[in-house]
Length: 213
Image 1 (cartoon, rainbow, N blue to C red):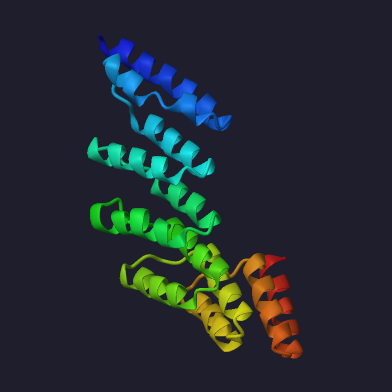
Image 2 (image 1 turned 60 degrees about the vertical axis):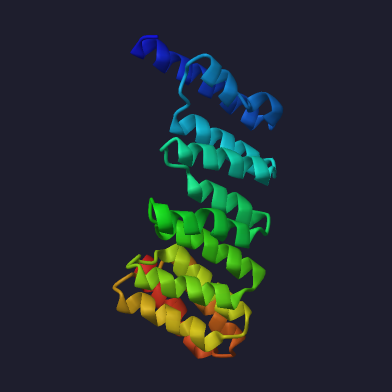
């Protein structure tokens, strides 16, 4: 089979798989064996489509199976999408064990988005130990937190009554030269209001107006 014929078949299979995944008819979407029988090698888009389809259909065992097949073939899975799907269904430990830890060990290394997904999962579950450990790892790995990560931390500590810790995070943002966005300011202002520090909340509001316009 020529290069162009091979490419055209991959695109065709991928389109079919994507369509079935979107309609969550995963029994029809699974066409990896059919591709192999036809002498067509699935690409990363094909595998990632299947993994995402199984994840959104809450078919975790199948997601992991295809993930392992993809890794064995030397292709890089879209771990962030898988982690996000697992965390949204409360499977934070599975997200970390199967995908985040795999990225740490085999690559590609987790980025700020990867950390943000897992931190949000821990925050939703109210797991401060997980948040602290993961954030410390993020710092040790030299990953610069983005606004999303800072908001997660501020909201998580605030909800758990650790207002002082939330404010320390806000101060850390500015020390790193990151200008807080309006959503981060709202999180901080809400925290100060819960602490009863209304004058400080007003100061932060005025600061937000000056920066964001």
